[in-house]
Length: 419
Image 1 (cartoon, rainbow, N blue to C red):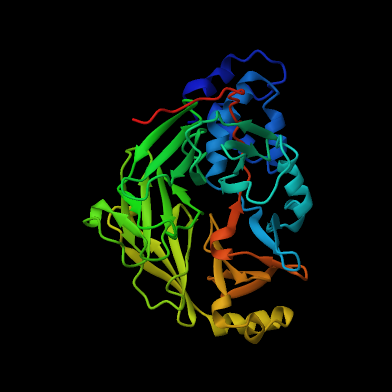
Image 2 (cartoon, one colour):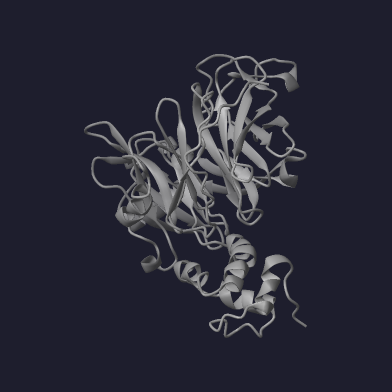
């Protein structure tokens, strides 16, 4: 027998609004009905029906929907070859093409929310539907939700002058709150510091990690992946010092794992294989709430899954795709051949589908989808002439719509003193 949900959702039984024609239904049944609203914008509008519906959608529907939110496209760094100008572009993707917004419509949906003109380098991250931007030499960070048409300014921390990159840590299935994580490069030796802003507390804190940098040229991927309180970031070469390995330089590719809840960190060895480009990055991403890593090894794309949520650092090979097989299919689809890639290493993994086993890969000029269940290859995007996808394996961000409302922090600035 269906029973009411706990918390605010239970208020639906006391709602006196005449519009709540379904108020006689148990809350969990009503949640199931609301979650079947396919157009998420309509679901947002339903919040205004009455207080009880707003509570049900916010506290029950949003987490339920977030766990299976559909992939709508990819935000990526683009290059205009003739002028060497870089900019942010969007690749739509959906099972039903009419569902996905056109590139210019999606870009307008968030750029119109920003209080400044979007320029090169201002876009930093996309995590489960929220976008992170930065403005100014003393950074002011902004978090946007294109679905709810919100943009909030994060209180400024005047100690962030040396920050080079920042990431979002957000999982609406777990919590409506997010964190902005800034990597402090002011000191090269351990411990490296993370400066973390929490939307729940509205304040900045400092976390020390076991890592430092061997030189200013240390190679770390700016694109991070967040899962279950852990933020993952790649190293590309032996440039990083770690107290956990006797302060010696890491001599191979590693995955740095930062536990934002417990404040500790560790380094995980990436799968030991003979790589075609040993000093380049592979691709980390999420597939069905598991962290995966992919890289080009010899003439095949390998895909591994990290077991036990980072507890034992063990990888399992789940896919091995021959490049020549992909080349034949690409040729059949749009007359592109491996020869036109320039070299085999130009074909790289770009991203993983968050709720299926579909793999996205391609070159600077095209993106493909590979479906392991039937070995199907499809061309989903081809760049315009004189345009390129920049560093695809570390600069392509999957976008899934999110219904979470953002808390407004006003225009207050704050200063964080060193501990």
